Image (tube, rainbow, N blue to C red; front, side):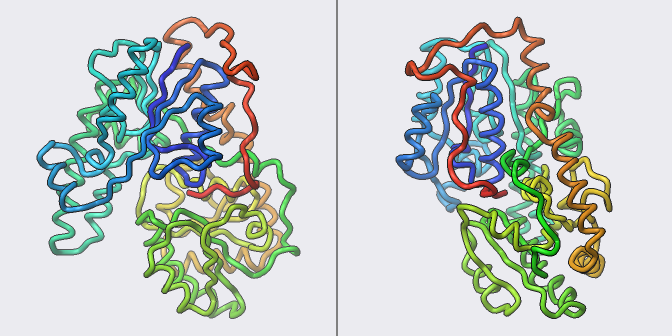
Length: 425
């Protein structure tokens, strides 16, 4: 089947949770179909990105418009949420129209609500929307934590606008994919047709499963956090971990350290880490493997957010035992106590971290069970079967794919470049 793949997440390198999911789905489709892609890029492409794009049939438009009063005003004038306005581009629209007109595909796969605006009304083929989150829920959480004042008012208004926009675009698609049962219910609650909503779970970096098992004895009394540090739920969760939970752990185990890795950290978060003698901030990483081998526990204690946490799936795939808040574990098909330890309040989260830092047998069981869970449920050939069902229902299986560049056929894809264990979410 011929597919046009539209995304706002340039997927290479997969250095965030969103990019990793986008790349995983894109590669899965390319192995089975004839896929062309158009993407928004937030910065000029590097030479490596240009080579990857040329090899994989991906064209991009550079666009990086921030949150500004001007963009907010334009979003109100245009009647769309701020994030949609920030991702609006005449050049991107023209590129999509060009790709559709040059050779009408059988299907359009829209990777995220931000680029639904580029699907023209006249397209009559198979239309699929992949929702990385039930976005309006993130804005509702943002509004709820703002207290009283203008910021809460603005966040509440934006949550309402996002909810209205998501409800408006979903009926345009034959299938809407959500990443979890909770997100699917959230989308149905605002008007999505229950019969058209399916699941497309997040999956971790598969390279992590290929690495040898970690060792309790080979690790140190160290907590690991690795994520995209510009995302507000991650910022809030990390501040909670540093200021409230880590001190409780150190009351019982004074030598415990916390290592924080990730890109795009705001200055105030870096300063918070630097003021804390038990915290080491290492910034962006090309290869997280040394950190996975050294740490004994992974912690994710956010109280907000949606979807499922790829950082947790990556830790499970690597075999690093994980402690998570209820919100962080949401949407994952886990058994608490077997695959990860889940707790509600600061004291319970600290106690769970201490348990994994000190109990070798429990550590070993959780490590093994986490990897087994990922192998059984969170690999592409299992998690993405819903994609196969949707395309099979639309028509006969695709024929042999044409050569591109005379070197390989679609589906004969190079491995990802770079170090293993490097993905972030």
